[in-house]
Image (cartoon, rainbow, N blue to C red; front, side, top):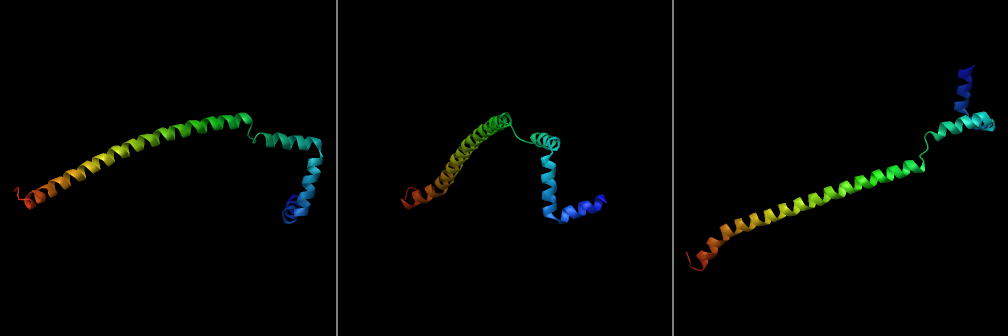
Length: 102
């Protein structure tokens, strides 16, 4: 009997809607549903805590990004220095030979 009723409710959206209307019309049932739903609703305090936590995480990410930028800048300078040293080591003898100094 119960399985048949559930099968009919699953198959008929109108019947489901009517059952929901009947259940919500009962004050005790409505209160039980509200209490069950309220447990899952975020409060202003929950949102404030989340906002604070997110600000902390964003601040930590900004610090990490600043550190990565500084490291990248330092690495870039080392690369430019290495390129200039290699270029100087290869180009200088050629230039000196061209002007006849060697």
